[in-house]
Image 1 (tube, rainbow, N blue to C red):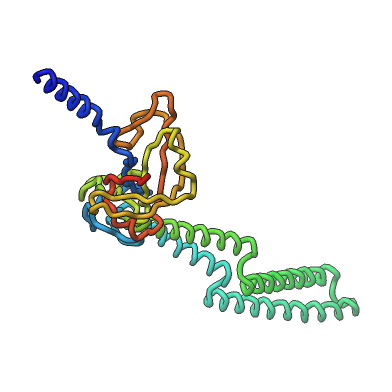
Image 2 (image 1 turned 45 degrees about the horizontal axis):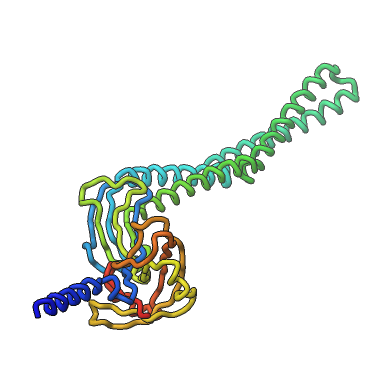
Length: 320
């Protein structure tokens, strides 16, 4: 009788040893993941205000932080002053002389015109006297020289007036226009830099980590806020090459979410890629031979709305 009891106990022990968890579990386990996003700044500045909290859902275009940029404010004034100076230079080049200068030039031209007319009359009289031999040639030449001088002065004044009326030389106008456009570019550059004081959410996302506090310095390229993209939910499971045939690319699988009372959703196989190390697997009870290659299967929910509500890093099961 005692031998029978021992034999029965030994059989029960063997049966309990055979109930290994790895052999009980037929469904593959994976993890729910989300695409991560880091929001950085392009220019350095101090954190002035933080408008979000960790765990908060934000939408594309929402302001996450406000930076303090005193250097940008100073450069804005410099650029605006340079633009005003360049605009004045361009206006002066196009317009030419002022109203007062125009009045002076017209008066100068009129005065030289009178002198030229007088010299013309004097030369005509001297020419008649020279014909009658009443004056010497030397006297006529002196009057003729004065006539030529008056004429040249009058023509020069006319050219000066015409030049001023048409503005400065076209080369000077182009040069002034170039300075103006350069100043406009500087103002635009400062305006773009000023907008960088507002750290904007590039996509719908949940705030995971806020890396700086108010008053701390944010360097260019430093990650200020990191989080998960709202529409970036995917399911990750690791399978050995012996079972990868069950996951054809583009096929749909039924997955179970244990923490949601075994709710089932449909997921589509998106990518299949080999893994290079055992540490990368996500299956809780790996069942594969050592020589087998492991593959990462990435699935995405067929219904995006269902994916948005899933918790990151939660476990799911792939039904056989």
